[in-house]
Structure formats: structure tokens, C-alpha cells
Length: 344
Image (cartoon, rainbow, N blue to C red):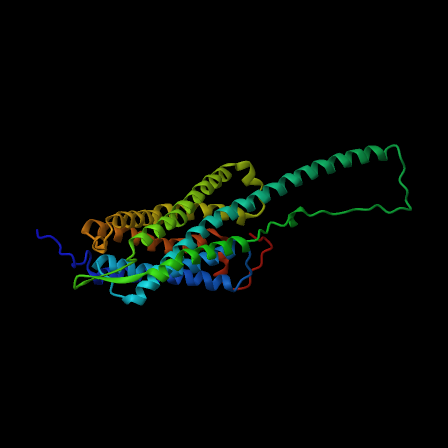
């Protein structure tokens, strides 16, 4: 069996194009549906972050298509401007989506903590009211009430406890960080001709490439992954405490915990392999110190295509999880008005 030439595609281009079009098209349609549904309803807290995640996934899905195509045919066919747009938008959207997933988990934990404090205060207040009622009944046995003074009553509704948590500051942080990390890609990305048929979309300067991807490895891979793992462990602990979960009045808070743990699982299983493979490729190629080393061999091409394929699938699964697990998002797709006093 003859070896595959360097320019021969790994997969039939027509089959790959059809597969990418189906997955990316379904992901784009689902994310646009979430954006349209949430833009027409009142939202705060969690729903605002879900809307931002859908926007980031929409951009991310559009950037993965050219990446898969170039990995398969082992050459970049989308021009210099397309290279700049792809690399910049890819870093921008991937950073935003990873930190937004972490923000959803942290926001859900904060909301549950407020619920727990409200429950503890209500139990303490009820016990205090019972003690006051017992003392008042005992006092009424020995003292006569003054009929000229009407009794004063005060009704307390502890269901009105404010559970809203501002998401403005974390959202601004996420988008500013995503823009900051993507600026070097927009500035330094370019195409390099390797031979007569192969065009590479990369950053030529080896020292800048190594330094920049060291920063990306920290802020775009390890830091959000650590945050997600810690938040995921805390979410699992909360969900396993049946006594607390049974007393939570807001069903959306529990649904948010379940959504956050599923989003973390999707990120670790479908997104982390591509980030790890990309980091390994960058470091191994940068250590060789020449442009020729940027060319791909068959083994790396297979891994790159596989990890990029799982990455694009994640942009379809995430909005589907939001629709399935969050009642307010699911309700937004139905006709008629929907109002709910619970803000998550």
C-alpha cells in the first residue's frame, strides 16, 4: 500500500464538507434560536450568561469549519485576511465560552448559597415567632388586654428574599479577557507558503509564538479548567445534600446546578483534548525553530481532525443542554407570554 502524499486529504473533501455543514449548521440554528428566544423575554442573572454563551458558541462554530478543512487538506485556502480572522476569532470565542461555562457554575453556586441562607433565616425566624407566641399566650392569662388599643400585626413573606446576583462584573471581565488574548492573533497571524502547494496559517516569529501561546495555555486552558473542576466538585457536593435540595423553593436554582455540571463535563470531554493537542503542537514546533516544522504529518493530522470535530460538536450540545435543563429557556420557545418572579 502506497504512502499518502503530503497534499492528499485525510478524508474525502465532499464528505467532510457535508458533515461540517450539518453539525455547524445545526449548532448555528440552535444558538440563534436561543439568542432569539432570550432576547424576547425578561432575563437576569443566569439567562444573561446563557445568552452570552450562545453568542460565543455561534462565533466559535463559524471559526472551526475552516480549521477542519485546512487540517484535512493540510493547507490553508482562505487567504491572508481569512487567516487573521480565523485565528483571532477562534481565540476570542474559545476564551469567552470557557470562562462563561465557569461563570455559570459559580453563579449557580452563589444562588444556592443565598437560598440556603434564606432557609436558615426563615427557620430561625419561625422558631423565634413560636417562642414569642408561647410567651404571649402565657402573659395573656395573667393580664387583661386593653380593648381601646387595637392589636398590631405584621406579615412577613420570606419568599420575597432577593436572590438576584449581578453578572455585569464577571461578564465584562470575560469579554475583556477574550479581547485581550485575541489581539496578538489579529496582529501577528499571517500565511506562509511552504513549497508550491502548501500554505500555512500561523505566526512566523518563533519567540513571539512561544511566548504568546505560553500565556494562552495559562489563561485559555489551565486556569478555566481548574476553575471548572473546583466548581464542579462543589456543585456535586451541593446536589448530593438531599436535605438542602428538598428545602430549596426555586426549582430554577437546582436546574442551574445540573446545567453547570453538564456544561463542565462537555467542556472537559469535548473541548479540552483540542486545547491540549494545540498546545503540544505549538510547543513542539516552536522548539524546532523553523517554518518548515509547521507542516503536518499524517498522524498529527488525524488527531487534529478528531479533536476539532469534537470541539465543533460541543457548540451544538451546549445550547441543547440550556434548552433541555432550564425551564425558563424551554418555556421561551413556546407561544404566549411567560412571567416568573424567580430570578436566577
